Image 1 (tube, one colour):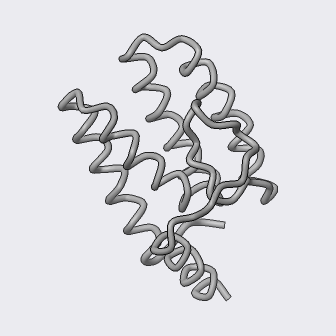
Image 2: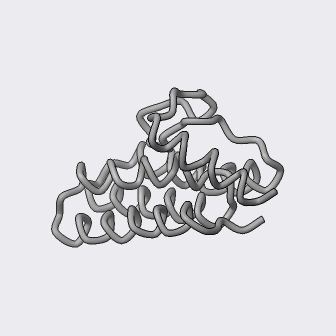
Amino acid sequence: MAIKNELQAWFETEMVNAESFIRAGLFDAAMGCLERAHVVGQGYVWPHVRTHWAMLRIAARRRLLVDACGQAMRIFLGAMGSAVGLVPSGNTGSSAVNMFKRMPIEPHLAALIENSKRDET
C-alpha cells in the first residue's frame, strides 16, 4: 500500500525540512522532523525506510557508531515490519528509544493518520 493524499504531502514536507536542517548542520532540528515523519510514515515500507536512512546519515555525520548501527538494523527490520503491518504505533524511530516500544502519538499527527485511513477505505 502506498502512502497518499494529505499524509503524503505532510510526510514529504517533513522530509524536505529535515534535509534542509541536515545541510545546515542542525541535526537536532532535523531529527525532530524525521521523528514526526517516522510516526506518520512507518506504516508504509518506502517512507519508513527513508526516515531511517536519513537518521542513519545524521548518526554517521555525528560519528555516533551505536546510533548508526541502530538505524541500520531499523532499516532492515522496519521495512519488514511495514510490509506485514507490524509497527509500534507512535514510535519515533530514533535509536534513543526501543524499536518495539509503542509511544503516544501527538494529537495532530493522530488526526492526520486517522484521516488518511478513512481516505483509503
